[in-house]
Length: 63
Length: 171
Image 1 (cartoon, rainbow over the protein chains, first blue to last red):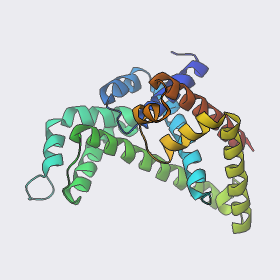
Image 2: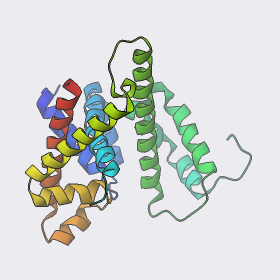
Image 3: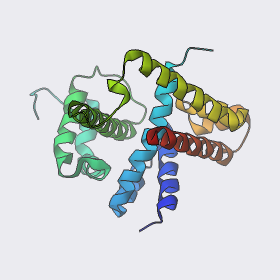
Image 4: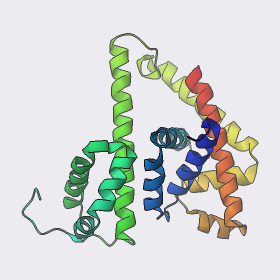
């Protein structure tokens, strides 16, 4: 078990990396997700944060 | 599989990497539905016009990742509709359109302010990464900075956005 805030940081690091179009470390992501059921929830929370900002910024009038 | 047609290029890669993809889907939240979702992906690729793909395996993992995100988003909005139906929550969806637009403007202003507070470089890098879909290596080259500096800026921006979202969610 990883400490909660530490897990949040690790999950965020994964979310940042996966968002890169050149990301290709999928097997390592699989292994990390398999390592602890809490990891998936943390990863999804991180992915939702970025998606939330994307939606808002994309809807913004162009500057 | 479902169609009698010859598998296309991506589908051939899919067959060859079936175990890895199913394992990823299972770990990514599909659980024992992973085989079914693999089949859904297969069907999606069948109707896709054939076009060259840089790295087919990465493309397939990305498609699997996106599928899981779509399913998750659909599940969340389904739950929300259900709780709206029972009158248990006051979500933006059930507020009048004027209210919704106001909330969207408030959130946008807060996101812009949060990004601006990080400084111009982190702000621009976050937008370049998220909105323009430019990779970290290219951003590093554009700015003439190291890959780890780009990553640090992105971490900082993601963290600030997550904190902001948590505040909005708590309201």
